[in-house]
Image 1 (cartoon, rainbow, N blue to C red):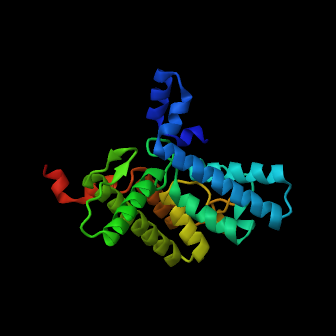
Image 2: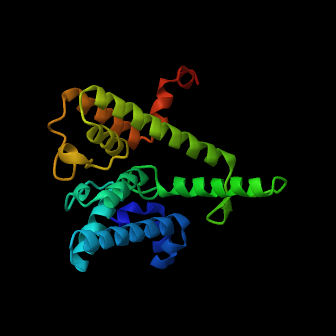
Length: 240
């Protein structure tokens, strides 16, 4: 699952150089690795302290569930929503985060978070030094404005889509946890949601047919990265 969350093109480069360590030279791979390790250790420590897990058991269940969620693989080892407030909150973020661009995972992708962080750093520096000129860089390369605009546009539409689908599910009588987590897991293509109905120990069978159609649309939009699908509804696209 972890390898499936890495950019596939980097595997080609590593095979050509016959040096797997070159994978770690990529900023996105390092960011994904840090996120996975840090999240696993935090959840494992919580399970040991609050849920009386043994250390190895805590590491096993936390790492398996986290790598499954963040790579949007769809497996579940235990009901992570029953572990407590902190793990549930962390998993809610990981469901949206996704792994690397160019991988099998869905979600927002680590790349976009890193671009957003570099943009935030640039804006903070502009506030400190209004007359300064700062070049936004990623992987030691300058980031052009087109990439920044695409990241902002995708992030905006990602959350708008989740809000719209969650609102539709709520209008069908589903509870808030099922509605919100169902929208997130559909758009991010994660698999399990949260709560007693669609959580890791449940499934989507009890949902109304209309909810399943709406979630199917959300999964399709998320898999096509939303903007790719939405552009089909603009008349200008067909006049080209």
